[in-house]
Each structure stands twice: as structure tokens, then as C-alpha cells.
Length: 348
Ligand code: KG4
Ligand code: ZN
Image (cartoon, rainbow, N blue to C red; front, side, top):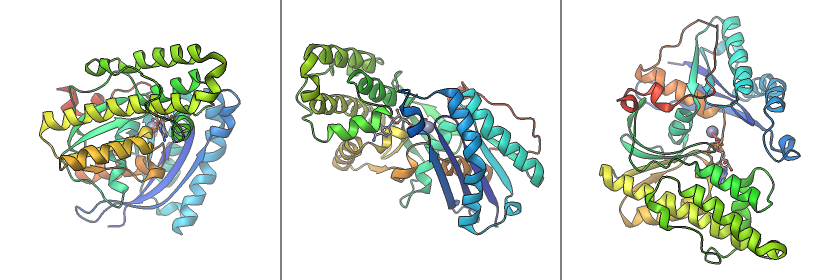
């Protein structure tokens, strides 16, 4: 089979387009090409994502990126058999750009379209890595808006575990970074600064490990610490960054270990933007190695938003028969869209 899927991601501040070829039989789909445009430079002046600017930039980028992936794969547009797009969750205007372009392309080609849940894209992105996982596994999904621990038994079979944290790890990185006066995008900037700091320099809250709102307490503690330092903050910023990162990472590692113990599973999959964090990877690798648990990550460049994970999720859903793409091109988007809406296991 040579079924080709074009995937379009435009839920936030990255435009991503990718081309994936369906696997033969039970073989995993293969990534043929992907291209990405990050809007970081554009939003930096405003200290965060400006939704209207994001939408307009997606409009400018999406077709040139589509042309680039087709050129890289040396395939014509009419070789595409299915167009997948991020249907939600995300910024409404930004999602509408991807949905509109995907449906227009599919209509012109007379091929089906499929709207994909952004978090399912993240969740399945490690299947594109050189070391893909096998079902079942525990998934630690850590993105800008979500921190969820899930039991994953197959494509579309996701069950939330009790260890899920209400607050988002990415947001904790971003907000703490902002409180320290670091520029957008906070997470990676804080992580980089943390490399030169002492993680034990400041005592930030850990006792809340048992509760769901740890990161709320952490942000308050970071703010208090930053205020206390006052003019001395610049000199101690790397230490505060390292201490903050250590607190977030410790919680994520402990909660993941609990989820593994609770399920008895010996495989952990990490996905979402915060999965790019080096400290998190190092601590998880060490803790899991000690316990004989295998850990899988997406390729570093596919941790944050991209089109490959959207095309991949579409390919895997179609392959196992949990999605039925069709030729209805009257699209809608779902800016708020809980993962349970697409998973019978979660809805139960
Ligand atoms: O998955 P993602 O690209 O977008 C969402 O679906 O939200 O995740 C973005 C989040 C942001 O909060 C960003 O600061 C964080 O991931 N992030 C990081 C790192 N790279 C991205 N956080 C910590 N360390 C990193 N290296
Ligand atoms: Zn994302």
C-alpha cells in the first residue's frame, strides 16, 4: 500500500506540515518529510502569543510549507490520499486556518479529510522515533496546557490515571520564567539558564507532591523568592531557574513512577513540549533504569508542535480502523476539546 497522508498543524504558534506514508499491514507509518515554521520571533516582542497575529502568520506559511514537504518527498500534490488537520484544542482562529486549508486541498483533490486531536498527536509522536514503543504503556503527556498520566492500551484507548496533575507543567515553566523576567517562550529559556544554576540553591515547595495543584504553589513560591531577591535577582537567576526546574521535574518523575506502580506496566512514553526538557529526560531515564522500566520519547524536534504528529495520528487511526475519514468539507474546529471525547476508555 502506498497511502499518503498530508498533515497540517496550526493550533498555536507553530505551523507544521508533514507527509506520512501508511505502513504495510501492521507496520508503522513512515515519515517522508516535514516542515515547520515557528512564530517565536514574531510573538517575542509581545511577551506571549498574540492569537490574531498567529492566525495571519499561519495563513502566510501553510502553503509554502506544504510545497516544501512535497518537494522534499519528490511527490506531486495529487499523490496525497488523505489530508489531516488539527481540529483542536487550540486557538480558534489559528485552528480555522489549518482546517480551512486542509479541507480546501482535500476538496480540490477529491480525497477525504480527517480532523485530529492535538494531544493524540503528541501522544502518538514517539511512534515516529527510532525506538518506537509498544502498547500498552503509561504516557506522561506534558504540554503547554496539559499534564496528564494515561494508561494507553492502543490507538484511541486512553484511560486517565489517578496521578494526573490538574496544572500544566509547561505553564508552570512559562509562568515561572515570566516571574523571573525571562522572555517568551519561557520553558526552553528557563531550562537553558538552569544548566548554569544550582538546583539546591532555593527551597521551593515539594510537600504538595500529594495534591493536584502543586504548580500553583510553586509559582507563588517563585514569585515570593524573586521579590525577596529584589535587585539581587539577576545574580541569582540561574540558581532560581535551576531550583524551579528541579521542583517541576521531581513532581513529574514521582507521579510517573506512581502511575507505573499503580498499573504494573513497565513502559513509559513521554510526549509534549516539556518532554524536550533535558533534566526531565535525565531524571526519568535514571529512575526508570533502576526499576527496569523502558522509557520512550519522541525525537527532540518532534516534542513540540509539528505536522508530523498530526499526519502520524491520522495514519495510525485509519490503520486500526478507529477513524473514518470522509469527503465532507464543511469543517469546524474545537478550541476546547477534552481527550475523553475521542476515547471510549476515557469516557467510561
Ligand atoms: O506541546 P507543546 O509544543 O504545545 C502545546 O501543545 O502546548 O508544548 C509547549 C510547552 C511550553 O510550555 C514550553 O515552554 C514547553 O512546552 N517547553 C519546555 C521545553 N521546550 C518546550 N519546557 C521545559 N523545557 C524545555 N526544553
Ligand atoms: Zn502541543
